Amino acid sequence: MPRHSERRNAGNNELEEGDSLFDGIKYVLPASFVLLILFLATTEQLVIGIALLGLSVLSPLIYWHKGGDVEGMLADIVYGIFDVGGTVILASLGAITGGVWGAVFGTIVGDALLNSFSGVMEGRVAVWLRHKGVKESRSPLVSGVGKMSGGFLSAGFVLIIIWVNLRLLGISF
Image (cartoon, rainbow, N blue to C red):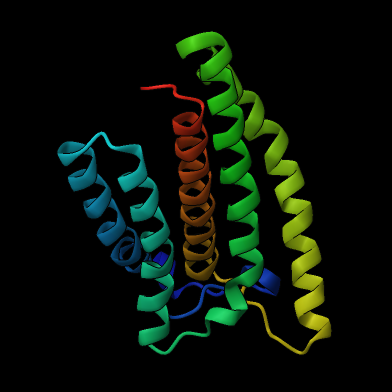
Protein backbone atom coordinates (compact mmCIF):
# COMPACT_ATOMS: atom_id res chain seq x y z
CA MET A 1 0.00 0.00 0.00
CA PRO A 2 1.48 3.39 -0.91
CA ARG A 3 2.29 5.90 1.78
CA HIS A 4 -0.24 8.68 2.36
CA SER A 5 2.02 11.29 0.75
CA GLU A 6 2.40 9.13 -2.37
CA ARG A 7 -1.31 8.55 -3.03
CA ARG A 8 -2.96 10.57 -5.73
CA ASN A 9 -6.66 11.29 -5.70
CA ALA A 10 -8.76 12.65 -8.53
CA GLY A 11 -10.17 16.15 -8.36
CA ASN A 12 -9.33 18.83 -5.84
CA ASN A 13 -8.09 16.43 -3.17
CA GLU A 14 -4.76 15.71 -4.81
CA LEU A 15 -1.81 15.64 -2.51
CA GLU A 16 1.17 17.40 -3.95
CA GLU A 17 4.74 16.40 -3.27
CA GLY A 18 5.82 17.86 0.03
CA ASP A 19 2.36 17.68 1.58
CA SER A 20 3.16 15.03 4.14
CA LEU A 21 2.38 15.47 7.80
CA PHE A 22 6.07 16.00 8.48
CA ASP A 23 6.18 18.88 5.98
CA GLY A 24 3.25 20.53 7.75
CA ILE A 25 4.99 20.19 11.09
CA LYS A 26 8.01 22.07 9.71
CA TYR A 27 5.81 25.14 9.28
CA VAL A 28 3.88 24.84 12.55
CA LEU A 29 6.82 23.99 14.82
CA PRO A 30 8.67 27.36 14.64
CA ALA A 31 5.49 29.26 15.49
CA SER A 32 4.66 26.84 18.31
CA PHE A 33 8.13 27.20 19.78
CA VAL A 34 7.93 31.01 19.77
CA LEU A 35 4.46 30.93 21.37
CA LEU A 36 5.64 28.53 24.07
CA ILE A 37 8.61 30.77 24.93
CA LEU A 38 6.31 33.82 25.03
CA PHE A 39 3.78 32.04 27.22
CA LEU A 40 6.47 31.07 29.71
CA ALA A 41 8.30 34.41 29.60
CA THR A 42 5.56 37.05 29.71
CA THR A 43 1.95 37.72 30.52
CA GLU A 44 2.06 41.12 28.81
CA GLN A 45 -0.80 41.05 26.32
CA LEU A 46 0.71 43.74 24.10
CA VAL A 47 3.90 41.71 23.62
CA ILE A 48 1.87 38.61 22.79
CA GLY A 49 -0.24 40.55 20.28
CA ILE A 50 2.85 41.95 18.54
CA ALA A 51 4.44 38.48 18.49
CA LEU A 52 1.33 37.03 16.86
CA LEU A 53 1.55 39.69 14.14
CA GLY A 54 5.15 38.67 13.55
CA LEU A 55 4.27 34.99 13.48
CA SER A 56 1.58 35.65 10.89
CA VAL A 57 4.40 36.37 8.45
CA LEU A 58 6.81 33.60 9.52
CA SER A 59 5.24 30.48 7.99
CA PRO A 60 4.26 32.09 4.66
CA LEU A 61 7.78 33.54 4.49
CA ILE A 62 9.29 30.08 4.99
CA TYR A 63 6.92 28.71 2.32
CA TRP A 64 7.87 31.51 -0.10
CA HIS A 65 11.58 30.99 0.60
CA LYS A 66 11.19 27.33 -0.40
CA GLY A 67 9.72 28.43 -3.74
CA GLY A 68 6.01 28.44 -2.92
CA ASP A 69 3.46 30.91 -4.27
CA VAL A 70 2.11 32.82 -1.27
CA GLU A 71 -0.46 34.65 -3.41
CA GLY A 72 -2.22 31.31 -3.91
CA MET A 73 -2.93 30.98 -0.19
CA LEU A 74 -4.77 34.31 0.10
CA ALA A 75 -8.20 32.64 0.35
CA ASP A 76 -6.97 30.53 3.28
CA ILE A 77 -5.46 33.59 4.98
CA VAL A 78 -8.84 35.36 4.70
CA TYR A 79 -10.51 32.32 6.30
CA GLY A 80 -8.06 32.45 9.22
CA ILE A 81 -8.55 36.20 9.66
CA PHE A 82 -12.34 35.98 9.95
CA ASP A 83 -12.46 32.71 11.88
CA VAL A 84 -9.85 33.37 14.55
CA GLY A 85 -10.30 37.14 14.77
CA GLY A 86 -14.03 36.82 15.29
CA THR A 87 -13.58 34.01 17.79
CA VAL A 88 -11.06 36.06 19.79
CA ILE A 89 -13.50 38.98 19.87
CA LEU A 90 -16.40 36.81 21.05
CA ALA A 91 -14.24 34.99 23.60
CA SER A 92 -13.03 38.34 24.96
CA LEU A 93 -16.56 39.71 25.19
CA GLY A 94 -17.61 36.51 26.93
CA ALA A 95 -14.72 36.83 29.41
CA ILE A 96 -15.61 40.44 30.18
CA THR A 97 -19.30 39.68 30.74
CA GLY A 98 -19.15 36.17 32.20
CA GLY A 99 -15.63 35.36 33.37
CA VAL A 100 -14.16 31.99 32.46
CA TRP A 101 -17.55 30.46 31.64
CA GLY A 102 -18.35 33.43 29.38
CA ALA A 103 -15.01 33.06 27.59
CA VAL A 104 -15.62 29.35 26.99
CA PHE A 105 -19.17 30.00 25.77
CA GLY A 106 -18.00 32.88 23.54
CA THR A 107 -15.33 30.65 22.03
CA ILE A 108 -17.69 27.75 21.35
CA VAL A 109 -20.44 29.87 19.84
CA GLY A 110 -17.98 32.09 18.00
CA ASP A 111 -16.12 29.17 16.46
CA ALA A 112 -19.30 27.41 15.36
CA LEU A 113 -20.84 30.50 13.76
CA LEU A 114 -17.65 31.90 12.31
CA ASN A 115 -16.55 28.65 10.64
CA SER A 116 -19.50 29.02 8.29
CA PHE A 117 -19.05 32.75 7.67
CA SER A 118 -15.29 32.34 7.19
CA GLY A 119 -15.87 29.53 4.70
CA VAL A 120 -18.13 31.80 2.66
CA MET A 121 -15.49 34.54 2.69
CA GLU A 122 -12.78 32.05 1.72
CA GLY A 123 -14.89 30.86 -1.20
CA ARG A 124 -15.54 34.42 -2.38
CA VAL A 125 -11.82 35.22 -2.33
CA ALA A 126 -11.01 31.97 -4.16
CA VAL A 127 -13.49 32.89 -6.92
CA TRP A 128 -12.05 36.42 -7.10
CA LEU A 129 -8.51 35.01 -7.38
CA ARG A 130 -9.57 32.69 -10.21
CA HIS A 131 -11.12 35.64 -12.09
CA LYS A 132 -7.83 37.51 -11.65
CA GLY A 133 -5.93 34.56 -13.10
CA VAL A 134 -4.29 33.55 -9.81
CA LYS A 135 -4.17 29.81 -9.22
CA GLU A 136 -5.13 29.52 -5.58
CA SER A 137 -3.74 26.40 -4.01
CA ARG A 138 -5.91 23.76 -2.45
CA SER A 139 -3.13 21.55 -1.15
CA PRO A 140 -3.33 20.57 2.52
CA LEU A 141 -0.01 22.25 3.35
CA VAL A 142 -0.82 25.60 1.76
CA SER A 143 -4.34 25.60 3.17
CA GLY A 144 -3.07 24.90 6.69
CA VAL A 145 -0.26 27.46 6.55
CA GLY A 146 -2.61 30.11 5.14
CA LYS A 147 -5.27 29.57 7.78
CA MET A 148 -2.67 29.62 10.58
CA SER A 149 -1.14 32.81 9.22
CA GLY A 150 -4.50 34.58 8.93
CA GLY A 151 -5.43 33.46 12.42
CA PHE A 152 -2.22 34.81 13.93
CA LEU A 153 -2.65 38.07 12.02
CA SER A 154 -6.19 38.72 13.21
CA ALA A 155 -5.56 37.49 16.77
CA GLY A 156 -2.56 39.81 17.04
CA PHE A 157 -4.57 42.83 15.88
CA VAL A 158 -7.53 42.01 18.11
CA LEU A 159 -5.35 41.51 21.21
CA ILE A 160 -3.56 44.81 20.60
CA ILE A 161 -6.88 46.64 20.11
CA ILE A 162 -8.30 45.11 23.29
CA TRP A 163 -5.14 45.99 25.22
CA VAL A 164 -5.23 49.63 24.01
CA ASN A 165 -8.95 50.01 24.80
CA LEU A 166 -8.67 48.52 28.28
CA ARG A 167 -5.70 50.82 29.02
CA LEU A 168 -7.67 53.83 27.79
CA LEU A 169 -10.56 52.84 30.06
CA GLY A 170 -8.16 52.50 32.98
CA ILE A 171 -8.84 48.79 33.44
CA SER A 172 -5.87 46.81 34.68
CA PHE A 173 -5.64 43.12 34.13
